[in-house]
Amino acid sequence: MAPLLPPLVRPEKLRDALAPGDERIRVFDSTVFLHRDVAGGPYRVESGRSAYEGAHIPGAAFADIPGELSDPDSPFSFTVPSADLFAAAIGRLGVGDGVHVVAYSQDGRGPMWATRLWWLLRYFGFDDTSVLDGGLPGWSAAGGPLASSESRYPEASFTARPAPRAASPPLRRQGDR
Image (cartoon, rainbow, N blue to C red):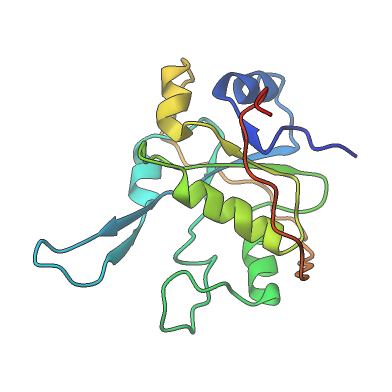
């Protein structure tokens, strides 16, 4: 079956897809902040949950990439978790067979964290995923509403299928060749 949405989805297309209340679409704010001391040194990683709590797409849940979607035993930030750990964590977020995930971040400088969630899902064999073009700033600029109340999806069963694969296709805007 063809995915519900393209890999890079325009805000207007997502708004239209959400309007009828399609239960198959799962939208996730995947914001992460990297802070660096003025004197230098390594970045300090901060979950974007507080930004999510301030404003997000109505119905969107929060995906904690540096927390529950990374290996907790690694000394390095953002280490890919084991298949079992990822399956359990993403399943608790409501991702499983028959749904389509749309990831976005609140940082208007780029989609780095949304593409990280997109990549993690694809790494574990889940291809029904998209990145929101422009993130939350693009959504707002297109007239999309905002919410501040936390949303959650019902838990789902996720089967991780990590496998060596060819490089993922590049993200492109609709109509680009």
